[in-house]
Length: 120
Image (cartoon, rainbow, N blue to C red; front, top):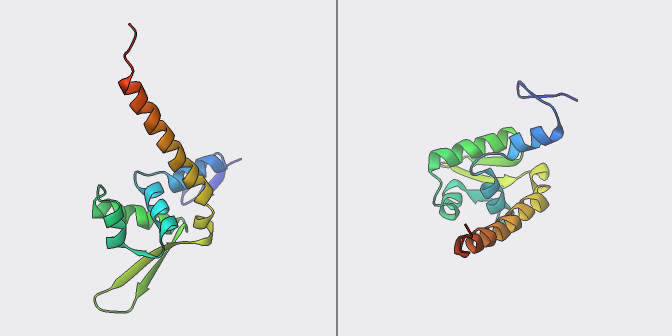
């Protein structure tokens, strides 16, 4: 089954899903918006200080293009922009929670392995 989306061909829904949420900061941004919403760019930056602004903006634009988040621009000076998850984006909650929980378990595993003497 081939899926055409944004001038690309995907061979399954899994490929399409990974394309939509794949990216260095996308899962982290979604997690932030699941915890508190709406958020402004500066608030997301505070929650993800390792991410530079340019990369966050790029990831937010991609999430918006894929309709996973909604971007609200208020007609004020200076401009006020807020982000929140769309209805389809909110459906990612169990997926993102599972990934984050697994990440905690994997971190514990990695730390345990680092502290275990190797037998060679």
